[in-house]
Length: 150
Image (cartoon, rainbow, N blue to C red):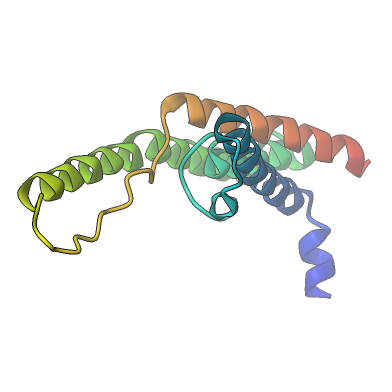
């Protein structure tokens, strides 16, 4: 019953499809550039396109298509979309830049020393272009799910 209702919700299907497609595109784009498979990219955050942006955009657009763009549900989804995409392109991107600087400091301070310095993850956010592509992907997936759902 729950699963039928859950996967019968076009906003859920659109969001999950957009997120999975974005993660798959990361894997394929990385292979096209580096000629090797990096399977961790299927579950890792950061990179092109933004799966966070794709997912929340697909959910918001799907809600707008199914319930109306003048509803409280769409307004809430749109607000969440703005917060997530802003955070992805600004706050998380800046924290990634901080990680790069801290890692460089660790390399400089401990160079030549037999110390196992655990480096911080540097790609935890997105460039604005990665977010925009994620938003576009989310819109396209929501429109495709809406078209196929009817």
